[in-house]
Image 1 (tube, one colour):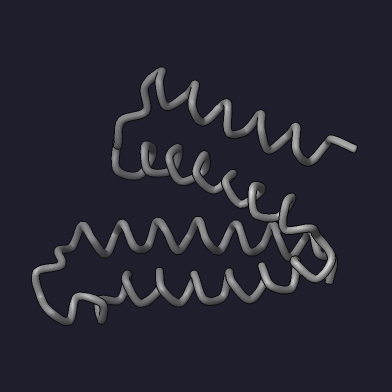
Image 2 (cartoon, one colour):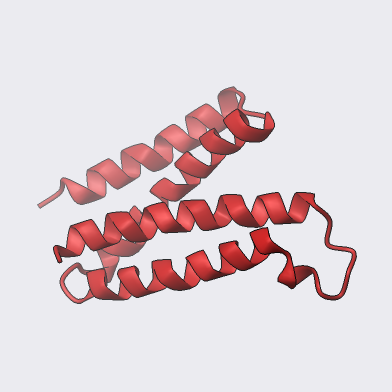
Length: 111
């Protein structure tokens, strides 16, 4: 498997995990066993699976490139949270997330 493909899969699974954790948190965490809620379990399992793909990617991709690339998930999660739950997505978020995207692009296209 290509290392960059593994990194992309890791990022996508991590995004799904974050959204699952949010969905679980919205159901309430009042119980001591809140972590047994299905969405929470899916979120935690997703992070575990994402870590496996990330480790595979690190075999060939320098961590100085791989780790900052994962921050594209911040952009995706913020945008998806706005679409799914109507979370705020104003000009400040657009500017900040745009800067993150620009940083990732610059990092991955530098020699």
